[in-house]
Image 1 (spheres, rainbow, N blue to C red):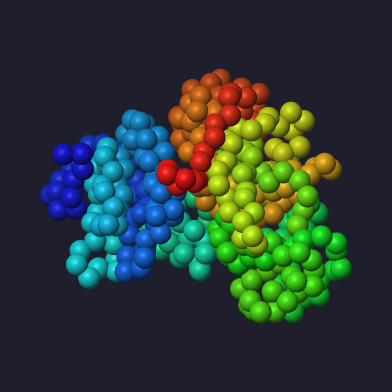
Image 2 (cartoon, one colour):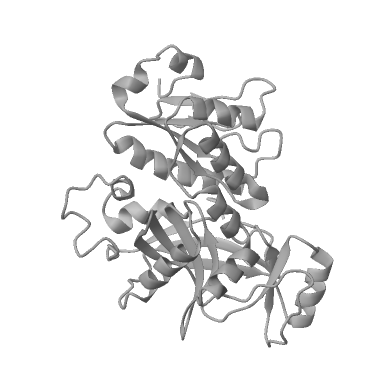
Length: 356
């Protein structure tokens, strides 16, 4: 068989001692976090893309063993030491805690929307598990676009102005974007024609929503590897393909490794963002707009993002060897620990349905 049930794992108490580090790789959408709710095909597809990429890299490493949980509506992945199925009537929280109990380390792929990622990270730490990812306090800041903008602005960084209900909007010309304050990606985001429409939309939406002026430029993102207390490696600079469908915005794909950071400006921005939000760790994303005068930050993603699916091809290596410090001296770390290692061909990652 390609996997073992939870009962088979429980009967092998010496498995962990023989194999080394066991990692609970928890992808929230496909791993049971939406049990009892509709399972959107687009979210499940994107979740599986990230889970598969992370699993492939993790299981390739010697001494590392993966445990995942799985929504019973989806097929089981292969190459995993244990796949946890929900028991009849079991809640998502109980399933998650069962996975933590089997592991030494938690690697969480989950949206920050509704405090989900923060709660999962906090639970892992409270259960005494290692956490490969951002600390709960960093997730709390980054989960809020409004809080992130204020923190980065205080640090003197270029950031898109972000306004919450009750705050006056400047009379800037051009379109504005209305979005959930804690939304992931383009979830719920829409573009309105002017500041008056933005003001009306924000008044109607109420608390938990924000508006931002539309910034002209290329939608982009950075993929970082952060090793506290201060090592920040820029892994890729990515182009985001965003479609405007009526008022709605949709992320249709990414070009991972779209360009190199020739002058080091993006690496410097990445280090400054990490310094401004203590507790960022592991794989972190920064969404920004590539303008004619330089990068302007939109938001910070305190988790692994979909760009990870193209990292291995772009880097020409398993990204986790960098994350776990497994490279011998001189391989992949030449030129200092902050130097980007990008430069191979870019990779397109599509988020459109297969039959689109």
